[in-house]
Image (cartoon, rainbow, N blue to C red; front, side, top):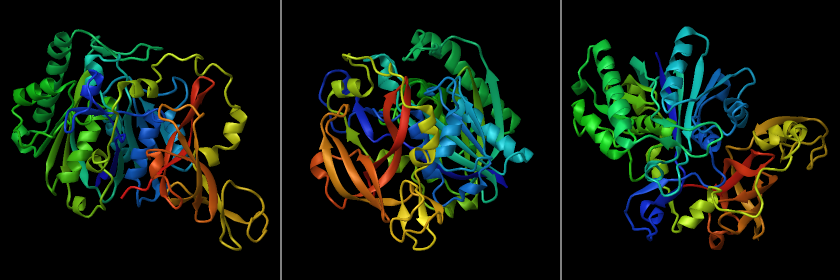
Length: 469
């Protein structure tokens, strides 16, 4: 039975209250949006969602990885191949990027289902991730949010099957971002809603209902993409969606996460559905598409995932808009970043097992674990007798730490540590922790993040965060 066998989500812990955008202090319980911080982007978010999705999964079975985003850090360099390396997947895995519109996430999901059904992949991993930027203090900035969702598609113990799909395309200049532009642009709101969003969504939903011989009342959950809360409500009303069936879009908590917006709502729906429930997912972007899922008995057997609710419960509030501006690189600085030649591509290639996959080695003679890899065992001095081990999924413990006030960061100091991982010692930055809470013995979990910008490109490595409960 081909379907979704696992899912995961990632929402940045940082929240920007909308009151702060307007120059007012944050208010408890007020509207806010999720914000990718200075060391996060679409790739790091997607990697985190994928790691949450693959918990307890044999990664050697994955034949395909599809990465969907409109905010790819590279225009000519595949993000999917980079994430495959981060996840320590087999080299034979098929990789592809899907981009161009906010529909890329559901398009990639449909592609994965087709690939598994056709037999060209046994198991396909789909990641949808976006970290879109809007002009500071604009209406779009208040509606946007950042996040990622991941789904594993295979023929096996599916928790949800795909029962129907209908798509339409439309050429219209409504929302766009030209090459070289940092901010997403939109035409006049009324034009976008009346001429593009509403008619395309209505047509896609009607087409799915007709092709599946269904009524909107047949669906227990309805997921709708929308540029804002008002448009979301109007399309739901126009299509007769019952209030209790409408999946909360999380405006005022998460925001519109672009490519990941509809997939995140789907992941959230899977957290609370029961066997036999039907889910309709309608997505928008240069047209629209609609998908129909049906949950199975397996959904009650799947181990608890780090889904949307788990991520939304983790919050760090930004109290000053200037901190957000600095984190996003929008503040004027003395020197323009990314203009130096950057790190040697040869060194990046040679050290990709260390930097991207966080692979260590375990001595076959004495079982000692070491990082980075070397020829001699530091414990028993055996030579060239090791097996590779993945350290990214393990828990580390801080041995010593210091505060660096010179390393460029929007929130100094940078916490620099030595972390013990089952005997291996790793030099590591620890983030998402207040300096006064840092202590020897602090348990940390590994997260893939940007380490700096150099040579006009992001450079990645692993960091630690306090181990979540």
